[in-house]
Image: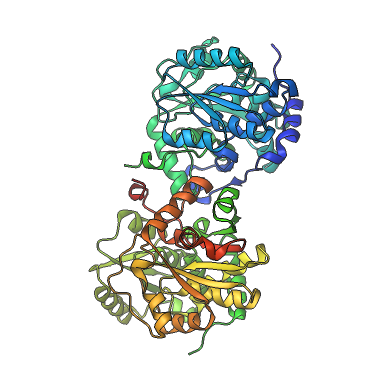
Length: 315
Length: 315
């Protein structure tokens, strides 16, 4: 299986640059003092569509030959990849279709429609998603853009860490959340090349710890009935992301739900920025295992900021 | 009555510079498109202590002769000025005492204590605040730092607009919230000097419109039983701020509570940053009167980001 190289990330960056934000890296003296290390937050919550997913989707769509674009693009997603693909489709001027569970929130539906994509609703389970997509693709010849099992998507996601490492020298650690593993894969390829001494950690909710178990046992476990507030991290690794992560990543850390909520609250209260639960997961590893990072320079990807404000977990 | 000049703001800036953040100016393409003007948000929600008040308090305290500092400093406040004065007191190493209503929230009490200040509780009304402070000051000879009726405080608050105008050329409008009028006074002095063609607007909740009525009728109305979610804007103008605002400010706009809540929500959802209700008030004027600002470059001071996350008005 071919996997992306650092050169693919460099090319991706050139390709997507004018359609994305070079997001800022924020620091907080009070959080540094609280946890005894120097934290560098890469603010992908400020990215286009509110999440790093814009990078991968754009790289994939901008790489498609013209003859693919004429039939449109499609995916199934209820999350940030849906908005990202809709945004990318609008930029290249192709029809974008998103298969979404009929139970998706009004907020998400109108965000996707806001970018001009069409929605086909399916039953709220994996089987119905995949079948509805397969039927649509075979009927229309639309190009399916997978949210993470795609080399262009992985290379695109890697551009976030490329920027972070360009902006902050001497990172001892870099932490990303893990769901399907696209962001962690891209991050690991960029980091191995640009800063080979930096330790690369994936962070995952304990209630969705399939990547942790998969890496431990050397085989992919599917994510079965995951239970976590971090609703962007429910998916399973693919062969592709499993292979890359196994090769490059030092460790997968798992974090408790209380740590995720506490880390969200600290980010809101101290940094005055909005992050979604999945985006707070890397910082939750600092909250839960501060001893691992003492005195170190730690880069964290704040992966997204799309959260329903009526459902914040601050009770 | 002597009032601050632009030179006082310049000196203030030199004095406080190393203790404050030069906060970023953020923009949002989607909000610009939505309202038909170019919005420049000066992010004082990212300022030390979470609000612009750090500027004025620091300038006042750093200007005090040594013989005043030995008896300590004091104020009455349940809001951001309390934290700001505590922060300033810690920097100069003097004892800081804050008179706070006994009903103040745990969050605010622990924030003030976190900066090392001492708290004396009083009854939750203006009379008890003032009497408790007067008794404390006469007993200890501590120096009272008023939250806005103080030329050094006003000059310090003016440094926020100085930075904004240095960073963004050709502002057609500059908008700040109005409570006691310290920020609006300092803003108006800086703006008149640096960008004389810029129109200066104060914005106030309709439920606390004493500044609007005072400017209209040419006399100070006290703020009587104000009712608004913008709890930083409950205070009345002083002779000093009334004089400065009457001389410099083009207009006071009043905004409905629904506009304040809608503008908070837009800032959270589109910009992914946390702002307190009072801080969203200038943007509420754009939401409520977009026709006034069509095609213009509009600077807004997002004055603070201290908000109880358990009480967000997104129901």
